[in-house]
Image (cartoon, rainbow, N blue to C red; front, side, top):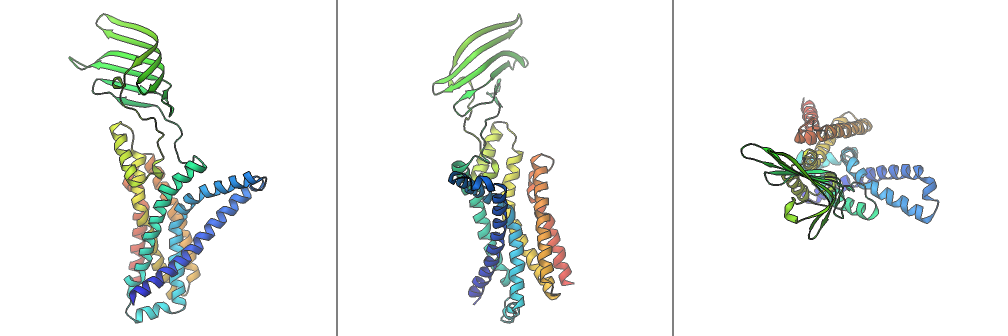
Length: 351
């Protein structure tokens, strides 16, 4: 019996979720159409470009609006069931609060999974084929250690293996750390057989002073410089969990900052919890306002809380990316605040 009941509740929830989500998508698409009205209907290619641009906006739109949509769908579903006295009938046959809310939580799991696939797989595919938003197009300068006796500076580089500037500094460890040699090149090209340097200046340092040797070009073997990737790095926001974890380990080995990557990792884990909290909050608001016959007010409060949740989440993430807040707290701070709100509301309902 409860399996049939669970399917019915889940379908009611999905029905309202689809309606609210469709409304958000329609409003955004209409706004985008009004903004690019002349370009969209100027020619067939312009219309296709408009469709691609709108499609590229949808994954981010769905990611941002899904929590508030889940909240609204939960309130709307419970309000509709209460208006027809179906909730009373369900409780009369022994369905408790957990049996009523469980289908919503299970459905929220499916929504969270769909959002994860959309963000980390569909969105990158769309960016690759229809645009380059969210995908790093440049390769910034980078310092890398070469063992424990040298450090190498690689300037801005291109995916084809070209490096604008290159500098290698070697030192002696005994009897104390002393600069032994510096090698600088205005341009370097990575090739399968090694490195080709242009406009090279090599300086040797010893007790007698410094010796300078300049060359138009020089060849170095692959082992003379540390390994360096020329593949553009993807935005961590669009990396699946395993790839993001591997990227964090790689950046740590290279001595690069991983703050933003940790924030994104914890945010991916916090996103399903945020949906679960929205379901719990929606159920509490629906129960509170049903007793007072104020379903419309509960929807208005849900919209307000949804906007507040989005704003707080963006603030926490921005502060976390800036390094002013621990990554875990930056990703989970919004969830923790709403958990306190839910517990407070639940206690108030019981009193």
